[in-house]
Length: 330
Image 1 (cartoon, rainbow, N blue to C red):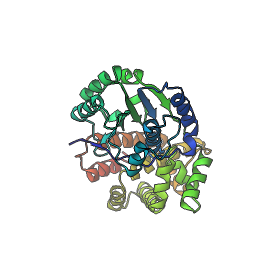
Image 2 (spheres, one colour; image 1 turned 90 degrees about the vertical axis):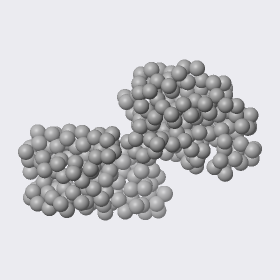
Image 3 (spheres, one colour; image 1 turned 30 degrees about the vertical axis):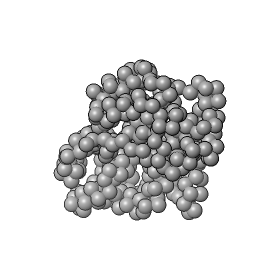
Image 4 (cartoon, rainbow, N blue to C red; image 1 turned 90 degrees about the horizontal axis):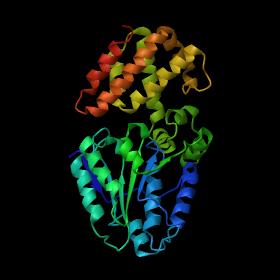
């Protein structure tokens, strides 16, 4: 199996950075003009799943207004986490494709009569992971959506989607949470101060940043930066560096992507947007050890490596990472 369909859905919530989008959606709900196919572009970890869950809760409520009553049978089932008219499709694992069998299953569910006599909600997460056949099958449903059925698609980026799918949807690109807003929200949620780089590493994804801090990610990130910069500077500690990168994969490669981008900014004297300002000594050391061309090539190779590992999930992560590290300075 390469995908899953579940009745489980996240707790509904509208986070502060989504309030503008939610206000627009409420107007559409009030005017009975809500689209039958909606596409939301927002990064994972931004609270996008909770926003869609809130939308489903309100749209399925018997009151049919811009807010959920919390008391009707629909709302009670929703609160219990087992509303039968919500179907949430997502890849089984990050990087896995969503196959045509799963899309055909939700197509059948879309055609079925609502078990509660109301609307049906089909949510497809990471729609950019649809295989070609699955995307073409979905396109047919978007062109002629069944009565009373709403398709909601989630993606990281509109650029990775078929233009035909985008054209069949009402498209919403969520605004990124401002750094100050995100930091204030994270500190309130965790009841502790949070360094700026925790927000910068997960720009636009405050929930991911909060999880990063809460799970001890600051220490893990520090170990990755220290190990990598030592290896680049001294060409020593290869196996220790591989070990720490693999132990914290895939986050470790995302962190290094930010770090190498900061190295390039450091070399070019563009310091205002550097995420790793607190690692200025390590930035300077790596910037002095690499030419601008080497840093560019290393960053490009890292992005290619990340794509390979995401698409070809059977690859040996340790081997691929070691080959990338050994290429430094070539």
